[in-house]
Length: 310
Picture 1 (cartoon, rainbow, N blue to C red):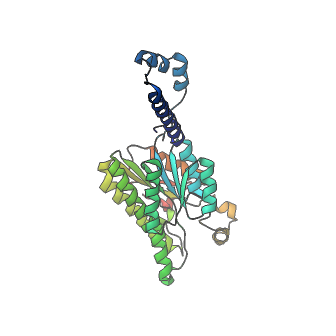
Picture 2: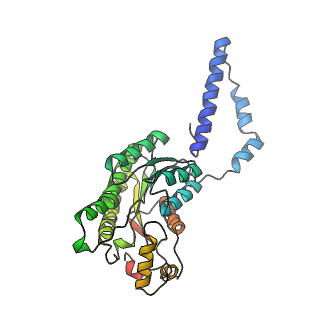
Picture 3: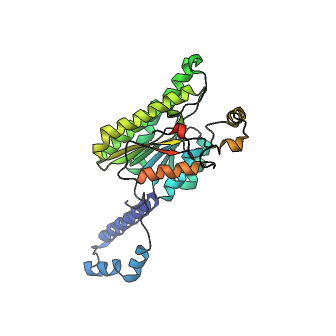
């Protein structure tokens, strides 16, 4: 079926299948005869019917399919809610199956339990999304983790894991999504969660910052090579968001090192206000809807000059 969202498409498909059954049954006992076109026109353009249709504003992302990773909590969950409100058909990905199922069920979204550090699983998720909805129009590559270690003493395995999840996982997602978008021939968008660490790394966060700096280069490369296909590629540079990425003990230690309590730590920006996961989700939604923006980094940090890309 065809509709502005997944539910509408399913309703349309159900009506179409019912119509086929009626025609088939009619032919079995006699001959099916459709209403005259003039009568059909009168029904479709009956003033009351038109009034009902006219009251519905088209959703900004109606008819668009968006895959979001890290969707079980934090920024990913906030993105799922905002993109659902905008009318997108969602395919949600996370490795936390229980929490992911709760988010997906609440939004009537499809989902897959996937570790983005597993290439086969990532490519399988994109394929499952296409089989579920018939295509893919947008990617929000948000999943990641923030390992810590002094860079000279960083265990090779930890650095390798960070690169696998925080950089290569984004590449595998973007490559699979781009292949689908190019085959569809109607463009699309790739959105990456780059983090402030890409521009202003913190002490002992080298394994994380190195991978995130690579994400910025990755984003620009996709913008450069696939802009001609109508595929936009952008990134978000967020800072100090209260999510599971940074455990409470890490926040407490960083706040103490600055002589702050944890709540004040989240307000040490130019606006002196805490930036929320929903603030970041709104920025992702803006980039999804910005038709003339690509190869850009949008900062959502309340104001942090040291982390400014320019």
